[in-house]
Image 1: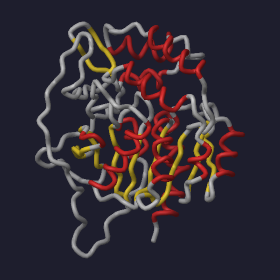
Image 2: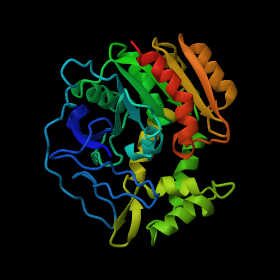
Image 3: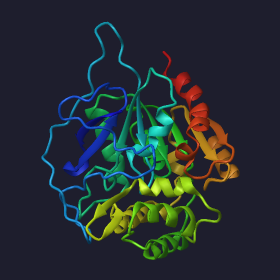
Length: 331
């Protein structure tokens, strides 16, 4: 159970965060959108979002919400902000968060264009916007200095924020994100992949089946991958479609896929853990080079895990990450 917090990002975009340490949800709060059984979620699109087959659902504007103060005489718990990857949402962290010990104030953010956060038709979906959003969340919720934990694109956002605003960041965890440029061919492959989606899907079972087995990118049946994508689908009159706009995802990716990010990585001065799945997208040699470039880098590897390491292997992920968290968050 997590409490919903509405915050304001860059350019006034409305963002939704989920506080895992708030206790029972109070007035104006809602249950975390995670679906532990993998059956999917129905996050409400922002008022500026329009997709074929579905209508925008207006939401009343809410004032940003501060996290509740600690009990009198007790120091506030160290803040941890979780940033999902492209096409993900905050609920994808839930299986891993449940396995972390107490003592951390953990907040998961639905980044712009994702989950229950606003999806402005005109964007922007630039690196600068994503980083500014994360900074705004840290400041408005009083999480700083925060430990940033990012997966894939969220990891890039995390280390760019750590490089640009060291005053806000205590430590950093990078999960399966490359510092090297992926190139134009990679972007074209993603464009072709989105076009092959048989959306709208007639059922959530069809979503599970396609992403877990029938997708040409799947080499062997992968039910966990099917469950991952089922959690970011919402029902429309004509079937099930992603809660995000695929064109906005391509635009978001376009802003970082052509560039290498070694320079910003080298500017990160806080303790940083680089975590990769053995079968993920970040190779061992590149991960170890990232650790070498980081002034205070450490390395962890999760056997049998792929790119979605925190989602498919939450226990192994928490075992790899928790000692680092405890080390940097213990006074």
